[in-house]
Length: 424
Image 1 (cartoon, rainbow, N blue to C red):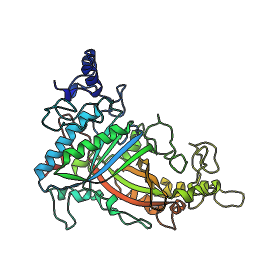
Image 2 (image 1 turned 60 degrees about the vertical axis):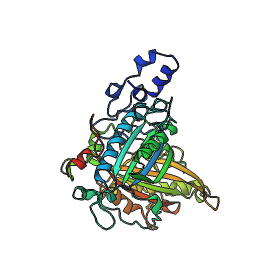
Image 3 (image 1 turned 90 degrees about the vertical axis):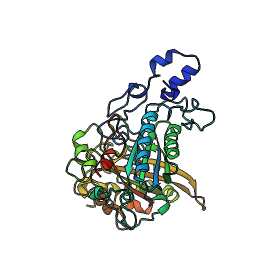
């Protein structure tokens, strides 16, 4: 047994003379305690293996580090080897263990440690690591099949259209690969991305990344609805992991939806949405509530009393006008406005300091999982986008975007992308 195979907490105990810790958590490989697929256990770990990747329907943690990568190698073998190494490292980190045999401090003194070390001594903090493949991994800008997998590109992984009002920054958009690391400790999430980026060196580079805090939706009925940076409850009617029927309908790719390797997976749309905080903060409460379509205090739909009261889009006031404004965000985003389309949202707030004019660079890093982006995100965003759409557009701006196919979960002994690369 090597130090790298010990949990970080157990290793501390061992180094400090607490030999009993070895019997509690100091076990290697598959012997590390596992949680159920849909939840977490008392040790603060979330199961890495399963039918679906963790980090999609599992209860949303408090912190996010998201990164998109450009693959720089032209070798299929090197890419496959990197994905295998990523998988092994992710399995260890999600179990609260160091990366590699030597870990933080157990390797040879003449070589860099196999783990960067900043999470040494920290618990797993419910870390989940979720991987996706972007359209550009399959073909380059000239249509060239980069790694012999072009024929396996799902039709649902079609490039997103340009939406009215988009102000996308190429340096915050796209990517061949994405990694979403979520944890209840920001240092654990950062540690995960940092180690995967280190492993990728020479094969892939980080193209862009985003730190997030304060989840902006619930993915479980066990969680209360959080507030976004506009001060409103966000994600009240989000899909929940307890509703298996809704997830099967709207989140998980089913056999026959496309290539077999995506069955059990999901498609991720990531959008960096900057909030124009200063104008919003100068807007009267009544106007803010008109724009959103909910009250700011309770989160109830306009005209109703409680947060989870059903939205009544037909209700009118004494003057005959709709209680929920025709351009209100909740109306235009509602499934009844979009042919029943729903998304599993898993976004986070972000603050990246201020811009050159002293304005807060902050907003929502929108993450949404779905079965087919063409019928879901594109349908809904088409309703919302542009100056003639969502009233909220006066206060927000989409400046980053990405689309990724997230394969199904990894079986013990398997690796991310195994199904994709095994078919070609």
